Amino acid sequence: MSDSNITKQALAFALKDLLKTTPLEKITVAQICETCGINRKSFYYHFKDKYDLVNWIYYTEFIARIQPNTYERPWSMIEAFCDYFFENREFYRKTLRMEGQNSFSDYLRDLMTAIMTEELSGTFSEEPSIRPFAEFYADAFVCALKRWLLQKDCPSGSEFALFLKKCLYGVSRQIIMQLPEP
Image 1 (cartoon, rainbow, N blue to C red):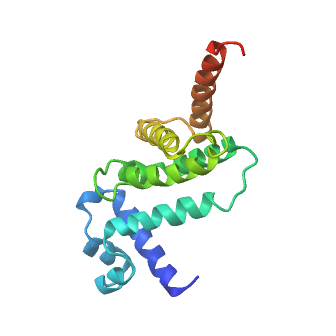
Image 2 (cartoon, helix red, strand yellow):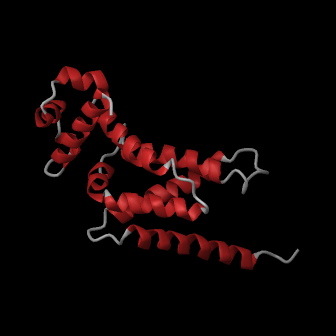
Image 3 (tube, rainbow, N blue to C red):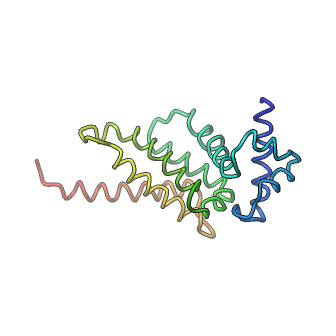
C-alpha cells in the first residue's frame, strides 16, 4: 500500500473512531488529525474537507468491495450491498443522518442511479431515456436503505434483501396479473 493510501486509511480510521462518540457535524479536521497524529497540512493534501474524506470512505470501502465482483443475478448484487451496509451499519447510521451538500444519501443516490442505468438498459431499451427509471429505483433503494439502517434493531442484510425482493416481485406479479391478454 502506498504512503498516500496509508495516510488516507489513518484519517478514515480516525474519523470512524470519532464518529463513535461525536456527530459528524461536530467533528473538526483538527480532531481527525489529532486522533491519528497527522498534521492538518497532510489532511488537506489528500482531502478538501471532512466530507471529501467521508466520500473517499464510501468509495474505497463500498465501491471497491462491491464492484470487482461479477454477479450471476442482479439480486446477488443487491444482497452484497445489503450485507455490506449491515456489517458497517454504525458508520452509515451516523453518516445517513447528515443532510444537504455532500450527504451520503446524495452520493449513494448518484451511485445507484449509475448502477440502475446499466442494469435496466435491457428492460427499458425502447424508452428514449433510461435515466428517469434508474432514478426512480435508486431513490426507492436509498429511501428504503435509510429507513432500514436507522431502525434501532434493524434486521440483517439478508433479511432486508429478501424484503426488497418480496416487495418488487409482489408488485411485479400484481401488474402482470392485471395486464390484458394479448
